[in-house]
Every structure is written in structure tokens, then in C-alpha cells.
Length: 396
Image 1 (spheres, rainbow, N blue to C red):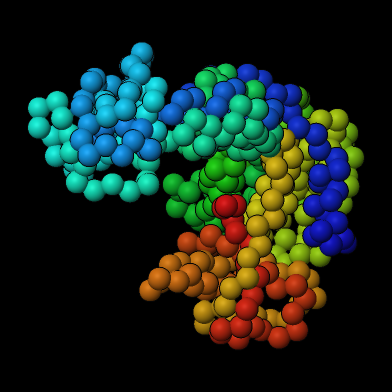
Image 2: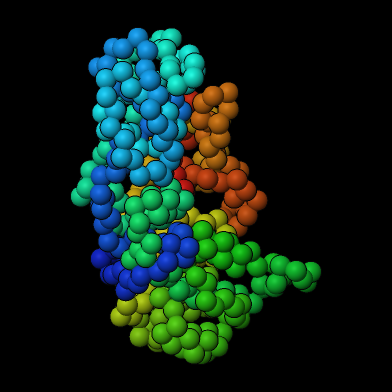
């Protein structure tokens, strides 16, 4: 049994990013950038007005200005302002030569082609060339996940074919004779399969592509044939159930028979101790403990790292500390515990509460979980108001 830190080190050490590809911006949302992006030009590329008003020279202290032209956004300006001259200008339009300030239209009196400033300060209301970035500045490092803001930046600087990681192809086998489809009415001894839905949602949220998912009975030969038939059509194999040492837990045996090298079989983790990680060439596999809370935790503390590593993403471990709201029914355990919890905004501050955890099979305790409360071998339960560590499930 190894520590979670050692397990994460093993995952990183044995996985390499998938081959990058170039895609149109419209297909790049959620993908990981595989090359650094630098400014191709100064941003903004020219001095431009930040307001509607009149362009003048900042040092021109004339009492009145004669308006000698009008400049709209997108215009190619050949105008040269002289002393005592102004140009009507609109937000985003380039400043004419000789101008260095924009007088707000509501701060002047206009009479024909003459304006009189009603108020004059040193504020320029000008967006200067290069004030956001200079040509060659690093804008996005490799490993950045591309969401709305990043895609807007790429569009704004003309990068329309970014080089990114492909979505990780995930195959998922759900094992257990007792499992039935969620739409079915379970018979005596049966339970509805929630792990398929949990894994599907997690994989999609992490930018992966679920290429295969099927429920399979606790039958070694059947499981072996199912996975072997997939051959190289996946990058990551997830098997729900079969990680422990029971008579029908075939996880380690299955991976060995398929030619995988097993790197660990247990983590000093609660819940999620019986977790197996293995690789076969560029492919990776996890055998996950079957209970849904164990699934939830292992997906976030281990499988997510594998997905990030395969995508070439910058690896994060976003741990924050904040007071715990309310007591927690914690049973001391030497294992590193990650307890589902929720952080909400209440009365202008963030409030963190542990969710109900009856057992690792209690799926009702996952509702609303957006953080995991970390309890590293604590011998006593933390009290309300005491500072505790939380792992953010949506990294900032």
C-alpha cells in the first residue's frame, strides 16, 4: 500500500501526453494547448480611443478647438491635428497624428464645428499601443486548457488553428452481477448502476471522450474478451469493481492477462484504498473500487491526474484552507481521508460544509459536492470553525 502522493507520482511517471493535432478554434473548447502562444503584434496594435468624444493633443491648452474631421472605428486615418484642432472620434477608433487625449463628449459644449471643454484633466481616455501586451510576450503557456476566455484571446490575435491534445479516449467496463440499468426496477438483491452515469459525466467534464461503456457480469473470461476486443481503440481503461481481493474481484488478474504492467494495487486512501493502476505501452488502466463515493474520490484524486497527463495539461492540486461550518461525524482512521463537501457563498463569504457520509455506498452524500475535505490521518474530528483543507474539484 502506497501513499496518495506516491500514487500520483507513479501516475505521472508512467504516462506521456497523446500526440498533438491542429484543430479549428470552433473545435478547441476544453482541449489542452500544446504550444506556447505569444503576441504576434503589440496589443492594442495602435493608440485608440477608449471613449466617444473629441481627440486633441494633451498639451494643447486652447480654450476652444476647431473640429476638422471625424474618425470612426476601422478607419484608415491620414489626419494630422494642428494646435487648436480636434477630431470627432468614437470608441475603438485610431487616434490621428498629433492627438494624445480624448475629451469626453459630455464634458464639452459643441457649437457648429467648434468645441469648448467644460472640464479638463490629465486623464487621456486613450488605450495606448502595446499596453496589454508587446509583440513576443507570452500570452498562453503550453498546458493551458482552452475555455471561453482563452479561445477569445486566440481569436483576437489571429490564432485560428491552435495545436492541442486530442480528447482522451476512455473505455469503461462496469462489473457486478447485482447491477441493472437505472431505468429498470431492481429485483431482490439487485441495485441500479450509478457508476456508469458518474464516470460518463466525469469523463466529459474533464474533456475526455467515452468511446465504450458496458455492464459486464463478474465473469473473468467475459471481461477479458470484452477488453481484448477493444484492442487499441482507447487510451484509458476504467473498470468499475474488481479492485479488492474477493473471489470475484478479477481486476489485477484481468490486467495481467491483458499484458499490463501493474504499478500499484492499494492506496493509503479513504475511501478508495483498493485502487489498481497499470500501463501497457501508451495505454493506462485503473481498476476502481465499486462503491460510488470511492469512485467519486478516486476519479478526482487519481484518474483526473491521468487524464491531465495524457492531455499534456498543467498539473494542479488546488488545495485551499477555510473554516469548517458545522461539526462532522468523522471516525478516526490512519488513512488519508477525502470527505465530499460543498462550498457555497453565504452573506458575502464562502462557507464550507461536509456532506453526509453514511458509507462509501451512500450516493446521496455526493449531491452538490464541489470540494473534498482532506483529513490526513486525523485522530479527532475537526470542530466547527476550525481551519481545514479542501481540494477544489473545479481548479481555478
